[in-house]
Image (cartoon, rainbow, N blue to C red):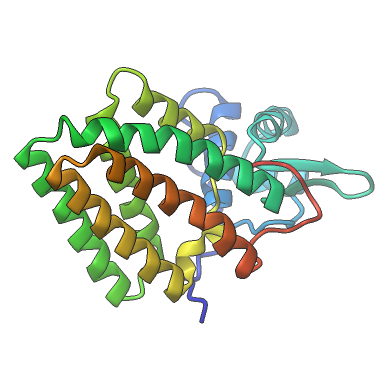
Length: 238
């Protein structure tokens, strides 16, 4: 059964002084609201409403929307204007296949480099995720998983691989509302994979670490299709 954390509605920020440029400010607010599910996939983005709510003119709103469109978070449709993008099955499959390749190599390298202290740190992350799962905190689960994967990437590929993974996440983020973490069976399966990856890292078994990491990430493709998380109507990656 799916679980989700209900986000608060869009906030009014007109009394807040924007940091940096106004376009940066609008971009930051809208990006956060999209990724946390305040603005849901398919929801219209009305420029006048955004400008009024954030206390800015239309010009920085338009600039921010262009940047969000370039990142795949916003789409423009005829007769509808700007809407929050949805992650298609095709885009999700490509995204996870790229991640599987990058993170699989990082896990293989990490198996030969990891220290006892780093292994203990990863175990602590895993235990925190287990607690979050028992408490049905899907946001904490998703954030914990990202930290777990990022830490392995930094251990295995601090020169290049960790940066590539960070670039993928920053340029093609998956909104919380489209995360497979909201489903109990997916969380159970993912935590099992994490535990097996930890065993492979502890043993220094590089081939097993790479195989398990790649299988773990690629399994999300089938899980998204099984739970119908993606919308087939759009091919825009987010």
